[in-house]
Image: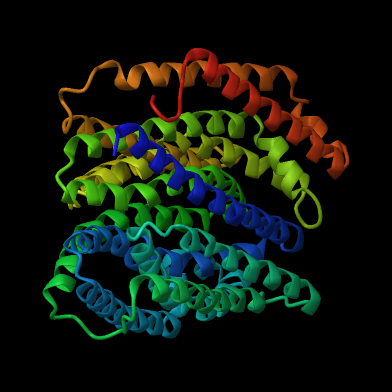
Length: 521
């Protein structure tokens, strides 16, 4: 197959995953809008964020993080051998072993929920008020979600290895539907403890697992769960998982420490960070995660087949495509932070003050969006070679740099009673992501010392020029932020659509005029 056709295939797979992920992210925004209007930025929302974040921390260890990135290269290697029965046996043993381990962890989480909340949100525990009690109650309902989503992630990884991306990309839609329904029930039942929100998370787990199991059976054969701790292939995956867990721990320790620090700040800080993070994750999920999803199985196959040149070319294309999307998105989120917040969330229990505070953290997060997308596109190039240690070392370095800057700066901010200390935490995340991506890029370049020096510079220059163009247009023609809360929701929606649509059109015209081409640049 020619290089152009291979890139076109990668572009097609990315487009499919990105399109389905967009559906999920749009529903995710609808979920956050419902939370903002019905819960606002206060006690219940802060408690729910903690109760949902704790199982998600473990999810990155057992599911999307360590398992997926360790399982796909080994599974893809076995696919090259063409033994269907061995693939079924491998999948069944990984599923049975993972399920048993995660079931125990979930049970421990339910039993020791107060200790987990005290560890992850000590500010709540010290106060001993509503936030703490509600977080414990919700966590006992959300922790079992870890079991179901871990199995779901393993099934998604197997489908992705078979180049079946659609079902796995659609699965998060079910989570958003469950949580939107839970938010509606919260209002209808006048549930002051938010218990129904925890049940919404719980229900999403088996719904996603059952949905994906149907497609996995059709694609991967008649596998059955079985204990496989002593199986050499399972042990190999577990061996590969260890450094990835350490690397995931670096990222998740960052999230955990942000949660710990935010729990000591003003009520609503966790909610402001959450809403702004969700908006920042929209382009990250649609483009960065979609690129990583299609890249890892492809790069794993190329490396297993010894096609080094195509492996390097595919990684380079993914990096350039990630930059072409993330830079303009970052500029748009930074410039339009307050208008976007007002358009989506203002109303109900979400006040003008909440809009302002969430917008500040969104601007800080936006600075790190290119770095976050860069990590998503660069890490698969290392994992495909079963090099798990390099990204781990880089992640630990970035984490250390992040908190070496964030902790003293946050202490100064609080001591001086400066405005919006929660935005310092968002800025620290942006700094860590930028350092991480830059270090990974330098290490990736060592794999291809003969590459032309202009291979990245010229496309980047075109992207920067086009991004500068839309930034000037948005600053010049977008209505002032102070005007957005004063007009009706319909007018706000029309304004933001005009701003985003006009900027997107100008950006792609700018890229075309500078010579950027998606398939062959």
